[in-house]
Amino acid sequence: MTSRGASKLIKLGWIGAGGINFGSLEGPWNHAIRMQKQSNVQFTAVVDPDVSVAQKRVDQYQQGPFAKKWEGCKAFKDHQSMLQSAAKPDGVIVGVPPAVHGSLDIAAKAMEVDIAKAGLHMLIEKPISMRPAEEVERLAQVLDQVADEKKLIIAVGYMLRSSPAVVAAKQLMKEIGVAPASIVGRYSCPYNNIAKPQWWDTQKSGGCIVEQATHFVDLMRYLSGGDIVQESIQAVAVGPDMPLKEMPAHPQAEHLVPMQRRNNRATMATFKMTTGAIACLTHTLLLHGSDFFSAMDITGDGYHIIIHDPYQNPSVQVRRPFSNKYEQVQLNLDQDMYENQFDGWLEAIRTGNKDAVKCLYHDAAQTYKASWDITEASGAAPPGTDP
Image (cartoon, rainbow, N blue to C red):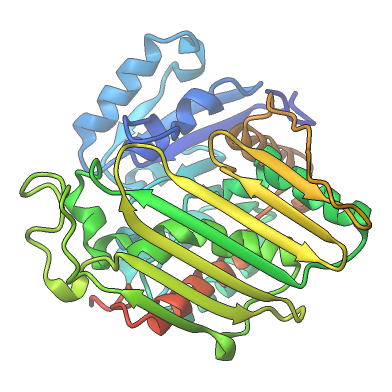
């Protein structure tokens, strides 16, 4: 992939040597394998508390098809060491557990502030934090100020905004010219293969809404063009006392997690948007197998748009004004939403055009707040209450 202004070399570093940045068996995530396809990028650093894992990633990619882009890349135990070294990059991709970053008030978790003040651009994976939403809003204000002073691009990886299905739905609404009045999002997760104890602990992962359904919370904001009205949120849930028969074997799931910190099995929330639209979000942790189910219905005067599986097998149907028929919308499936996200970030770094980025940090902070508010309304233990 090539972004505009691609003749300018950008040196990049990786914060986190785990599955989001370097791939896993659980999903399509692998930022490194995609980012190395970009023109005129050079990788200078991989940071991970387990520096042996960071070094393993460096060694692996220095033997790969884009080895030249990894020449001289160094492994570091923490971001401070990287920032003080000759390997200091121009920008970093932050893909670490939410419990270790995203704070303004706790110095040990103020990674973003450290990196921004050092003058580095950032692309940060969600969840952007585990701290209280009020603190994250203040963090967003600080990062905005530093970004303005140092001409930085601080983006967040809400990649579904770049899904071919979402791009098509957004264009359809623009063509029809009528704002949506109702948005319904459904997100169903298979649980029997999630063999990560930290994921099952809401104080480490954020819980199902902050960690997973946040993508649909974000799409509701993005597609409606408004924010969620906090006072309008109502939510109900089936709690963690409902047994799940196909839980991963002990101790790979929630077996050692206190009941009050376990994930709800099903959550339903309704709320209004500042545009006047109404919305409903459901999340379930009930399916077996490996395939997620996700869909979103967008309805306005005269039209109905249905987005199916914007993650891996996207499709869109539309019923247009004055029609009884649903038509299949042709999508550009050659476009990879992760690569599109990287294109926009690198273009913004090279040109200074923030409009190339679909989700800047201050925007993501509003999605985080809404996800937090829905979690609290459902009666689940809110994330970020650890000291």
